[in-house]
Length: 84
Image 1 (spheres, rainbow, N blue to C red):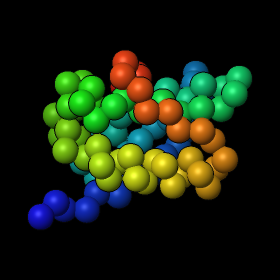
Image 2 (tube, rainbow, N blue to C red):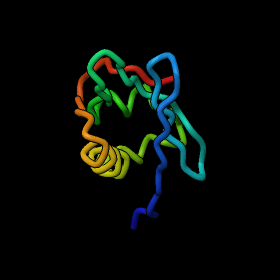
Image 3 (cartoon, rainbow, N blue to C red):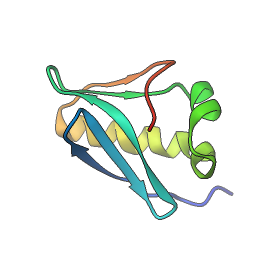
Image 4 (cartoon, one colour):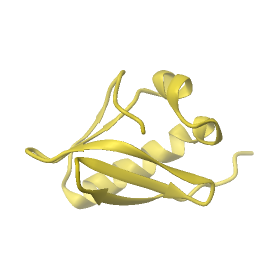
């Protein structure tokens, strides 16, 4: 059984969205001209995400999708999306 992971999302200057949970944090791209959040595909996520977050993609995607919908910000899932 997968342990639930709960993320918070905080926009930050320089077109960044800080994603934080109890295990740590990372940054995704949040473009400013037309606000849009970019998330790597699940396959790409497995290759480039922090080791502690590799299994979080389904939960992250679901929570981020809800946050984006509530904030009226498009979410784009694409290969090559940035993770810092």
